[in-house]
Image 1: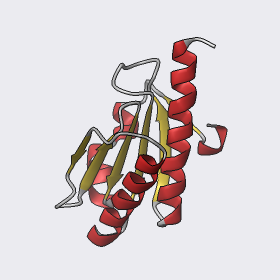
Image 2: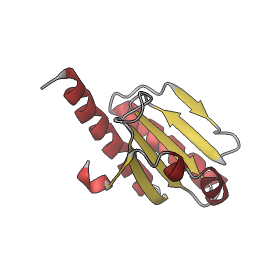
Image 3: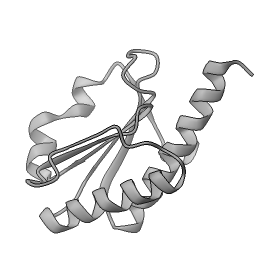
Length: 123
């Protein structure tokens, strides 16, 4: 297996962990975009939303905890205090947690439409 294939396999495993953490805290409308063919930023964007500030922060906390337990390094967090859009950058996996209004406003699914939408079960 090439180093790239091993890296993609690892990022897929981490993406599954992040998705499970989001599901555990009842995130809504979880989407996964494979951007590995269109960007060097990451392999996967995971996009989800919560219904209010405390839930969005709880989603962020759960993802951070589970990913770090799996050995992922949280490189950067943005937006935690306001919790309109929290970005968690784990390198090959970037998690975006929005409130409904900002998810519609920023529409990352449209911006990253060149990436491949992936069914989370297929990771």
